[in-house]
Length: 539
Image 1: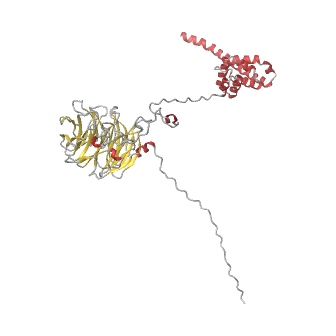
Image 2: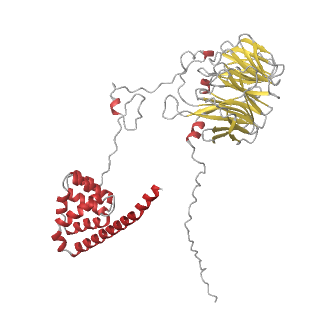
Image 3: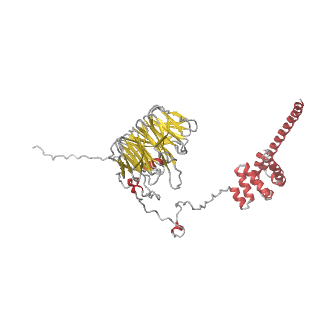
């Protein structure tokens, strides 16, 4: 019979191995610099639905610093206060133009606005009522730019495709000066921040000219060559430097130095279309001073922030369209950039929205007040419980804590009148200047000889070793040679009874004999040279 065997069950042993979990990679984003944080703190808002390319942007010099944007055959006025509440609709618009608006400029008091168009007409508007007050027509070709002087309410500057720069009397609607010299379109211009009589213009003939209305022959007083068609020019706040934009470069020129080029910034990939001056830092008397920067925009869609003090780019931003114009508010709170597709990229920094008195009702823009932090006064209980992290106010008197002077060991002992311990301590440090200083202090206190008499054999050995090394040095010999004689006289018995002290005395004797030998040799040389010098003096 066949043997029936039960089916053998096979068992498998599975082993589990620990797998090290994958760690998430650390982000490679670099930490932002304080200046990058400053420019990134502007809350971005897009103002869409404008008709065409934003050819010009301008801020009012007076609070609340409204800004105007030129697009197609109209211009729109916006309140920067509304940007904080995401209101992107224009407060008002002016459409009394027959051709494309090319340039805008506010008067220094913010009450009037000048605008030019491609028909060759310049109009001056009342900002509050938006009615045209003056119509200036003299250009025979399109006007490319118009500018109010920084320090003058009565005149206006303009330039256009007829290659003529005109200086206007606004009240009389007449041309005061026709300035010839450019050979191509006059594209841009700016007025000096320190003189009402000087201004600059840039042209497609690659040149930038400096004009002075006091010059009789109406010729430019200085000329620089940018090397490319000039798209924009600005005066820097000092009045001695200008910045020019053209091609893919922004160049800085020193007018006081005769038109010398200071630096050329070429970080844009395409044509730079507009530049302006921006400021960074803390306002209202903060701890950090305000510093000026050059803001440039170009057809590559980038805005660059250039520190012309350190000659480097400090911040860069990319936008989704070619950029045509840029402007920065006088209160350093608002930044606006115009693009070629009719969108304004506005940025507004957070802060109090209070408006100075007299400007809050302009165009009906009311001031939006935020509750301020309660100021601590000396009459408040919390005033006396401020912590160490509390920052001082402007009128506070600061009591500075004096730094504690760290004393050496021998100085501490001298303050405690432990004279012998101070001498022994400084002898162990092996610093001859400190040792001699302590000895002179003990001489002044009439305690040096008493300290020498109280030294034990080991401490006396330290003193004799110091005298052996430094007694013959000219700097210390006046004090140490006399001290050596006194030590030998006072401690003669201790020296005879100790072989170690005898060895120090022998070494001291040899060093003194060597010094005497050197002195004798020097005297012999002096005796030889002196007669020769006398003979040479007689001849």
